[in-house]
Image 1 (cartoon, rainbow, N blue to C red):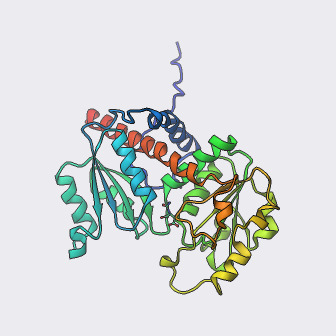
Image 2: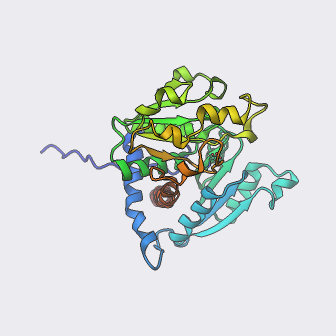
Image 3: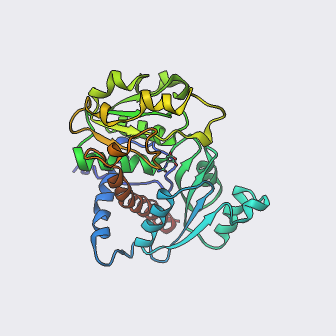
Length: 321
Ligand code: NCD
């Protein structure tokens, strides 16, 4: 008798470095797993024993509010022991390298490293040189996979499947790892992406990306189902990429006036931190179309899912050795 084909998808990754190399099925699997974790946050005792006895280190070489706290909380809710590492309070400020730092932490028995670093590729480098699982919490201009996953989760939860949706990413795309991961995730899930911004803030080789490009928000805003506004990342820019912030807001800011031409049920998203009055008007950020705080809430479930999945692979691999 012919052996029955097992179609059941099996997660096999012990690192989450980016979304570029993930399949649609893998991305959807993370989002489906997150659904299961969402209800833990609604319980009176917000804890599951999933990562009990495991050690997670949050290595943040760049400032962060949402992502760091979200990872800490996610690991806490799964009962892991969590260690917070920041550049300023560590021996990195005395000249210790990333690899030496990670190897020393590993010698103390860590299982998962969550890393944010200003150098693109730092998480990948780490994953090749240490045994612990590595999760990218944002690397340079490269990727910010959990942000894009929580964005997709929020869209699916609010508007349903991404297939056929017309989504836009607006603003400083050149310096945005959120945009890059968002492009990979949303196009794989079937959305059409339009990047909107000044030519000076478009990424290099934009013509090779699976996106449409527009330079003027007013020309295209009425098409979109989702609008993802980005912060201008001044800290990543050498010089100024546009004449003035006033001019930027005038052409690209999401104002109540501009929203009048958008679809009535457009989803307004922003990864945070917001610069109110610059890329987005306060009334719009807090308005009825905004899902900005839902994004933050959903981030927790998504990060719990990612921690759970990479840990599960590590445990299976250890068993089979
Ligand atoms: C983003 C980041 O750090 O890449 N923020 C975040 O993680 N929510 C975007 C930004 O800093 O503008």
